[in-house]
Image (cartoon, rainbow, N blue to C red):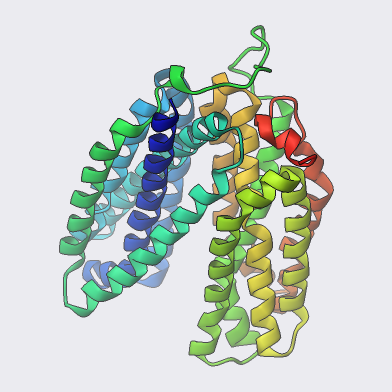
Length: 395
């Protein structure tokens, strides 16, 4: 059992890294694909919405399927779909084929996102201690590896079709080979306090929707950093393009490091503390970035913002999965789905606000969301939370 649990953790890490790597390779090749297809930035922006719509649909579909068939079946199929679909944008010849390709890629990503998180819950339940944040960190590491490798292949003159096709072959191999290490549903140890047998699994409790609302707010904060941190330094503080790029680098690096450390902190102090003090730290960092007129201090603010947010989303996913083991996939899909909408809403919300106020003042909206998370952190307290989590604070 112990060996199979370690194998389950290892292959879950592989699937998280694969997801980040596949998406990262697509992001790196966006300019090349845009030029090959011959579309404008505006058309590309609309087509990217299809990727988001496909991901949201995949999340909604996969949650119930994971509960019914088990993550061991759904994760490899989702990984195969996501991997195979990444080559399609490289083969697109016009806006219509690119739109269809992005919808399929989003569908595969959404399916893999929910199913691998559901399996991560299974692994975490078996370990009896927090391990979710480390999985999310490997997703980020996969994206970093994609950026490095993608830069190399572009410099070698490889076409998007060749590079993305190679990624698809690699991803399909990982999807098949890693499947053997996934835990069967019956093998996943469950907490003594299971959800009541009379509880209808088709109903989503108000607590799950509250977790989903928090995920929407906090992932919107993450989306704001992804899309606007560089522009903030360039347009508000008049930094050079090279220095402005460091804002997103500082944010993403701090978030990755924070996620690598968050499980140990959660083990010691519990998930409520991670969410409450993490969101508070994020609020301090964003406040610093918003009002600073000194570029180094603004960069530090974005880094602190990333460090604060780093452990928050994994706690929400984990709480949703542990709330009812028989409906873990469905509950994770609710939280992940609304969270993903929040991520997409970042540019859509901040952009129009810049017509009425300076860019830095629009950050008061995500700052307010961080404050809401601080005040709502108690929602993570539940008798059905991971066994060690309620005990971690007393350790």
